[in-house]
Amino acid sequence: MASMTIRNIEDHLKARLRVRAAEHGRSMEDEARDILRTALAGQGRQPANLAASIRARVTATGGVRLDIAPREPIPEPPDFSR
Image (cartoon, rainbow, N blue to C red; front, side, top):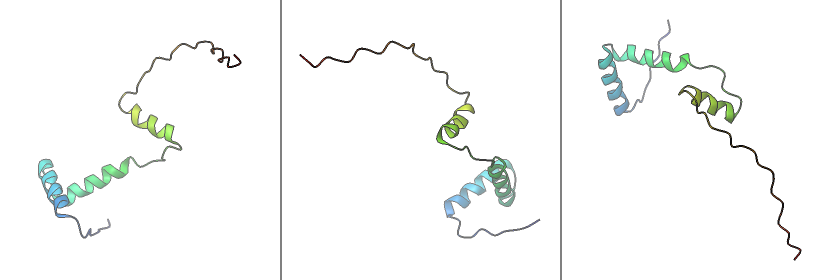
């Protein structure tokens, strides 16, 4: 396995990592590995367009069902000849 060093981490991030690791009962190093593993596990092909991206986000929450309004005939344009 490879190893890496991360330098210049802000103090508040290190403190949050320490607290999160303690909450999960593991070392900061193991917690950082788990965060990276989780963040990169979902990396797949990105949606090709905005609509697909929005659909992917909404689908995870159960989606939204909207009623489609019935179509009506197009009104006659106004007569400005008078």
